[in-house]
Structures are given as structure tokens and as C-alpha cells.
Image (cartoon, rainbow, N blue to C red):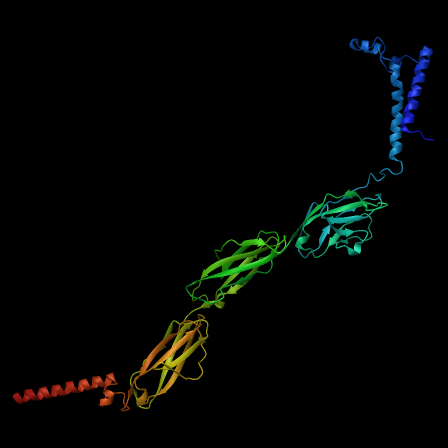
Amino acid sequence: MAQTPREWEASGLAQGNAEELGQRQNPNRFLPLWQEGFPGPHQVEPHRDTAWRGTKPLAMAPLTQALPLACLLLLLLGSAPGADAQAGFQLHQPQKEVSVIAGETLTLSCTVTTGGPSGPVKWLKGWGSGSETIYDQKDPSSSRGMRAVIDSNTDFTILIRDVRPEDTGTYYCVKFRKASIGVDELYRRGNGTVVVVQARPSNPTVSGPSDRVEAGNVASFTCNSWGFFPSDIIVKWFKDKTLIQSQLPNVTPGPSNFTYNMSSTVTVTLQKDDIRSELTCQVLHTTLTAPLTRSFHLSQILRVPPSKVVVQPLGPVGLNETVSFTCYVQGFYPGSVTVTWLENGKEIKTGSTPRPIETPEGLFELRSTVVVQAVPEKNISVFTCRVLHEGQDPLSSSATLWVDASGQQGCSSGGAHLLSSPGLWLCMLLDKAILGLVLFFLFKRWQA
């Protein structure tokens, strides 16, 4: 029967005591101690001589013989069943930090050596009570992570497809020891891999004023992008490929703790020649190989009121002649206008309004005509062209119809029409002046 360590120690001490007793009974049984490596009486140092004289050197023999037995005991225990026979087992998780773009596949590496205890290997996100199982060797079908090498007993590298920003965290490869009863015990754990999921910003959107802005005024424009990580982002504004000054972007947390939203604003003073101009918002981020851009055409919000509304004045016209009044509307944008004709303040029907014509500058112009019969009742009537553009205050221009009852556009005598035509007034004055000169000449000649 194998002896316990205490029994071995006791037997060793007993043997030592027996040997000491035999030495005393037979001094010649053992060699002197100095012949076995201990100093003789003449070799003892002076200051230690006194101590040696009161000491029994043979008393150390049992302890010396017990040491090899203790070492043997430790070796036996090390190889005994139930001890940690897997002391050489290793788990290797080489990645310290991994960066991946959202939507891509994440690869997490882990290898183990053979000879470990019975039990599964798992991948955990986080550690402690809040950890989440990403892969479980016992139930791989329910795991989000997939084995890169399915049939391997040593390679437990996993793949996580279509990663999301919320997958950011620290991942651990863990070896468990199977327990006979209850939950498996932790056996080995990797050092952890910090995963950073970078998310690309969305395609930017650019919005402008809800109503049109008249040329010469300031308009604000906003560029938005969202869903990106990390938060560092650069926004640039261009007007027709020329960089313009803008405010710093406003970056705020997104719906989750792993994404951000961005808003950038720029103000521009609009000009009437901005019809073909455009603003461009450019977004740069570490996840992008090329900047994202979105343009806004200023013609969408620009308003240029008509620069001129003219109705050409007319001279006197003959009775019953057909008269055309023409209204010129020039230099406006956009091209939708409403033209109304008024006769003495009352609207008259003119039929359909002609379509505006676009000029080379991108502005529009329009010509509208109304036809009137020059009857006596319409003499000195005022015809007005009223233009309404983009709901703004109307612009107008007027002309007066002068009707010559004699049917001539020159001078005429007629009491009724003398008051209605400045030309007739002039003719009458000229007639009287000529008559006065003739009478004066005749009077002078009569005196002579």
C-alpha cells in the first residue's frame, strides 16, 4: 500500500533515529563526517566552533533523506489522475483591434492547441453579466458568427457578415471545461479583440428656402448627412466649382450610440445671373474613397422680377381705324407671368396670353397685344397692361387712345374734337396766327 507523505516523513525520521543510536553504540560503524564533505574539528571557523560543539551533526541526516522522497511525491501528484493534465493547452487570440466598414464581413481569429479538457469554445461580446454570445460550439446554428473552418478542432476563427455600427465592442474567444453537473466552467480566455465598426455617411441632401428669393437678397442652404461613424467629418461648399465660406458642420449623435448626423449651412447673396448657377455640398469621411456630393440649382428658388413693362404710346388715329396696343415685359424669371389688359380700369378680354421667350442669359421676355376699334366712344380711353409675376405686387404701363373724328391724323377744325386733340389745338393756334399776320400786313399797306 502506498504511504502518505506524512507516513514517508515519519519513517524517514525513525530511520534517522535508529542510525543515530547505532552510531552511539558502535562509533566505528560510520566514517567521520569530515570525510563525507563536512568540515573536521580543525576546519571549523573559530567563531562557529562553539556552535558546532553543542550540535549533533547526525541529526540532519533524516531531513536530508526526506527531501528526495518529497520530490518524488510531487512528481507522482503531478501525474496523478484528476490533476491539470492539460497544462500545455494554449488559446491564441492574436487580433488586438480590428476596424471594419458597416455592411462588410468581420473576421475574428482564434486558435487552440489539442489536448485541452472536454468542453465547448465560445465567442462572447463583452465580459461579465452583460456579455452576449456570438458563437457557441454547442449550438452553432443559433449563432450569428459562422466558423471560417467548419471541421477544424483547433481553428475557431469566425465570420460575422453584414456588420452594423452597434457591433462595435470587445470580443473574447473562450474555452470552457465541461462540468458534470451545472454550467460549464471557464478554462481559458483570450485577451480580447476590440472591434470598431466604421459607417459611411449617407448621400447628402441639400435644401433651400421654401419660397423664391428675389435677386439681391440672401438665401440660406442646408446640407444633411447621417448614419456615419466615427464622428469626424468634413463638409465643403462650392458655387460653380468655386469654394465658398460656410459654417462649421453641426454633428450630433444619431438614433444609436454608434452613429452620428451632420448638418451644414451656407448663405449666398443671389444675383439675377445665377439662373444657371448651382451650389454643391461635398462630404469627406475616413470611410470614403471619394467624396460624396449633392448639387442644388439656384434656378429652383431664384426670382427675377420684370425689368421693364412698356406700352408704346400712340398718336391720334382716324375714326373707326383698328388700333393695336402692345405690352413689352422684359427680363424676368421664372417664365410664368399673368398679363391682364384694362380699359379705363376695367378688365377686358384679350384671348390667350402668348408664351414667354427665353433669352440667351436665361431670363424671359413676353409681348402681349390688344386690338381696339377707334370709335368715338373710345376717344381718350386709357388702356393699361398689368403684369403679375410670382405672386408679387403687379407692375403696369398705360397708353391713351386719341380718335380723330375727321378720319385724318393731321389738323382739323371741329369744335367737338378741338377739345380732345392737342394737335387740333395747335392747328387752330397756327390758323389764327396766320390770320393775324395777314390782317396786320393789310392794315400797314392801307396806311401807306
